[in-house]
Image 1 (cartoon, rainbow, N blue to C red):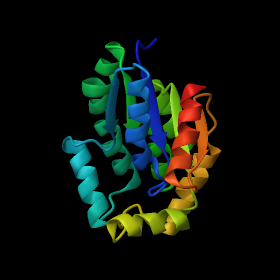
Image 2: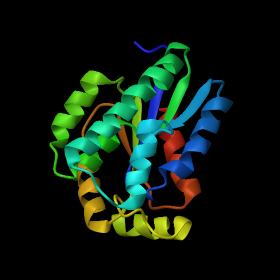
Image 3: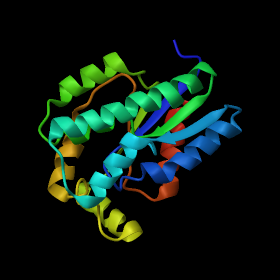
Length: 196
């Protein structure tokens, strides 16, 4: 059993999870918890390879892409997440294995098999917040904040498949948040689930 807690923020690109992470971490800190913010892909060698691929739009085979994410996660868990949990910290992670389930599942891999393998291999989240938003609206946000969407992942037909897999995942640690409202309303909904 973890001494600390693992909270993951999930959803399609543009759903608002990255915007909400600092507010969630701050609220946890104000409640007296020692909080560590982190993200996947990481800034390590595997994460940099993934980000470069995402920007270029030059996709690798789905199984190889999944391998990159798994290797990045393995290092992340060993070097960052597991030590923080052992210290009793609350780890708030922007993306974790449910993103691999949804994104690589949408590339044609068996998402349920990815989920089962992930749960056997990595610490389970104590809470996974999935921010739900239509892909069309999410891509509007992506364009508003960053200009051109990343060609590898930020395409509407692809994100439709990703969103469908996120919607199909049922686990005791999963909670869902309507990400379509203004940021403050989304933040309040997230904090209400945390307090529960």
